[in-house]
View 1 (cartoon, rainbow, N blue to C red):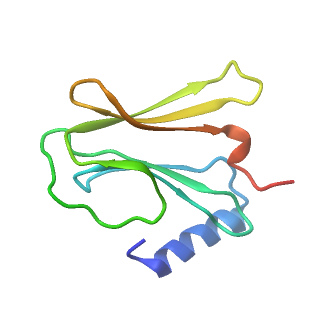
View 2: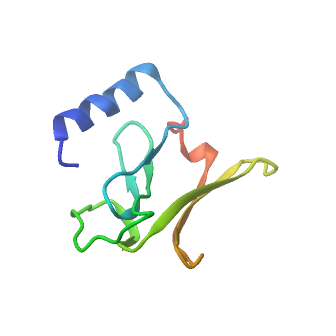
Length: 116
């Protein structure tokens, strides 16, 4: 979000290549969060950011696309996929050091492509 021209270029590449089912997995920001960015004429871009396996972090950057709470404490990200469903479902999760699910989001594979 802090690099708007790079964000525009990235979304344009996804549009130009007609890339379906793009999901971002990221880290190294010292906190965990799930985000969902609406993109006109495309589909929402989801991001599972997990970092902070060894330390907590006192502050976080704003994110208007954040889903649920930010996890400042030690955390890990997990993505479970139900391939057995007719429309496979991805379960994006952030789990704290005690094993507690802190924030999650479910996304259907069909949601990760432009509307027909």
